[in-house]
Image (cartoon, rainbow over all chains, first blue to last red; front, side, top):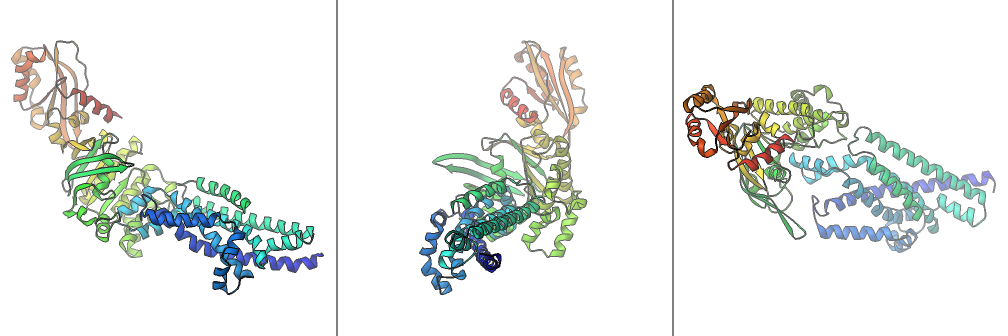
Length: 241
Length: 349
């Protein structure tokens, strides 16, 4: 394959990946953030203690997390069709990607929010703040550096997941690497996609770390510890995908 | 201003019950600084947390500024609207400051005003006024991480005052600070108490805190208040553990057949030459083992530890003479000695 043949393929693949990962990240954050906060609030000793609800949410999250993405994609086909009207293409891939990422992000949010000092919650309670105020003014802002790191982790994991979206004809970089690079022995193209993926992931990680760190430098009370731990968890997670 | 009656708090965990508060009756008058002192685990923290119902008491009532808070609490663990409104009129300062690290000093002070729904302009005006009051007007734009411990606690105090409270609760506010900073924070609390007529309830494990700012004090042990009263009353109570811890005199008995007596002078009595009168009247030699004059809770107090020859039985008459002079006499080694030494140690820490 010549470069002029590869170029449009790669360009399209980049856009497809970006499109799928972008939308599914957005949905994962919108869905996972409240879920993660709820996991903390409903836990024993939490502000909205509800052991039954906590167990149910926890179990749902665990089951969704433990399912291999390729199985999840097949299992969700009916659901995907009911939303997008089709089970193939980019839009169809966004549904299972988002569904898979919501519990993933929710667990990260849970960890981040748990790191927030209970004394701050107590302080706002003593001022007469209600639970919503505490979530809005304390838990989310104080956990923000960790939440940004969690988002980075989720994006990187989603890029990994999206490689499998090729199986439903969604395209993307992973799909190119498998179909052209592996199945048609276009080794050169495969390595180029791998290189592009490496660069994209590095850039995202760098941007995420930078954003988290610049928020941290103002605060510093909670320290950089949670962020570092989340990053380690991230590398472990992407490997298992 | 603050009254608790029969306040009881029992923690249950895995079938075990721990009684943190065991029927506490506390009465804090309007405009006074009231200190609750005790060792860790005595129940001080539970007590102050029960006053604004951060902890729900198992039994008993809490009344702040004439309002029965326990009645507002409702049954669930969540605070209803009325309780939250009542809380917003009670300021609270914490040992570890509990400032939001992502907000500037000014924004931290504005937080309670945001909760109260004050308009933006009014909020920043008020926050700057309060920062001025605590001496931090120039740090409004700084983040808590850039401040020293004492400055952080000043922000904490400014924040606690934002809702114009009549009552300030201080939960070991100076325990994380060095002695110098502790003094300046206590001075600030005292000034606020005088200027704003603020009623302050503070808990501490440091006797010096009680000594330098409190009008009244209570001693807690194992979830109960074992002694309480104004500093003057406490000093006038024979055998009071708090009094001897607030104002210790040292000096060891020199021989077995001696009687050691602590004499406490307050006000009028301090002007009489009682010791020389005693010596002349009964023709006995008196040695002074230790003596001190100090101001405790704004009250001039003198205390002297003297030694009389002979055993206690031989000195009943001279001791009676001293009591007749209106002095407070504690015979050392008779009764309260054991407990006293524990507290003196605690105070010294």
